[in-house]
Figure 1 (spheres, rainbow, N blue to C red):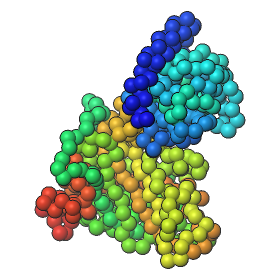
Figure 2 (cartoon, rainbow, N blue to C red):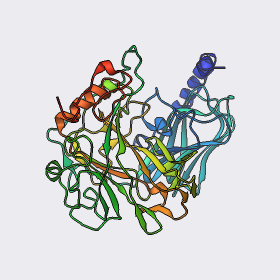
Figure 3 (tube, one colour):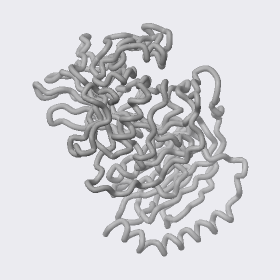
Figure 4 (tube, rainbow, N blue to C red):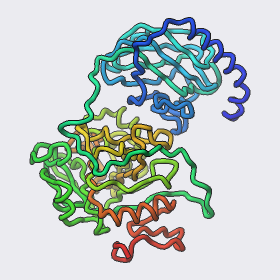
Length: 466
């Protein structure tokens, strides 16, 4: 039975359940002093349904997005509150596919769990649960589905009192955009169909290695040469610990497009103690990360951020909110760590997507991430409303055979991450964004779509504005 059919058939039952849940909620004590702690926080799930119903959709404050699991028991959805909290209430907004038997559990570390609520007779709908517990992590742990389908939650809301201090919005580490972009409402529009149809919304930046084996990171460790693990740099040829927007704008580039003076860097790949560099031009995609690709704007000059983390665990890398293809070589695909062996003569590849929603205010923040966010089911969150190009690294290293000694300077394969410091010529970036991303094309670095040649190119044969 199709999911839409199931929803129609179960709608009356859901209405009855909703009415019952509301009556229960009325009789429960109010918690006026408690705060909603879970909204917008990092979330993980045991599984997702077809990759289109992510965990974070259950903590986004929207009733039109959901987390859905595979059709097996047990399944769980976990939210990280960021600090230890006293938990007093949990609200669940189920789709028609609900949990008949489940627990609400808390944990101080994401490993050891304590149950603070349990039922075997739930009927779905909207549930408001009075609970008493504490922990940094809270999860709903389903042990019996109410239908033959998986678990499906529109919203998972955790209320209580957190021990965390509200983060600052100003001070050291905050770099402000001048001017800021304000008054933007995230677009939920779907662009009209075109003939021929739109299948891609992207252009490529092809950049080769520009500097190698430097322990510099001008975003994380500005003006501290050698303070970082070794990095491989692409794009701008001057990137070092003292890099600024002005120095990048005055530097040369290893990118095919002269107007792209952006600094890109990632941890150096090591085979034993020998550094291995990617050969030739690497592919850095600029795509639309949102459904309304016509709403994507160019990066502001000086925007910088870090994608991923050198301290990431395998589960965090695999469940990253940006699409992660993982590592590939030969016929091996979707590995979350570097494979122990790759077919002789093949190469090691990785693909990893960046956030594409900007707060419109900061070019950088102290953690080099908070000013950026990932879309949630194709729509930017309200606190990061500005859709900008979604970068996707597609890197390739010439290693094959026995890879047991291959790792990154930052650690295991799942420590892979990268940095972006935008220094595009604004007019060139705007032309490529408008023609290729907003125009729904699959462009090469010239802004030319070989499948739609009648649309022309954004740049001339020298990769410059005509």
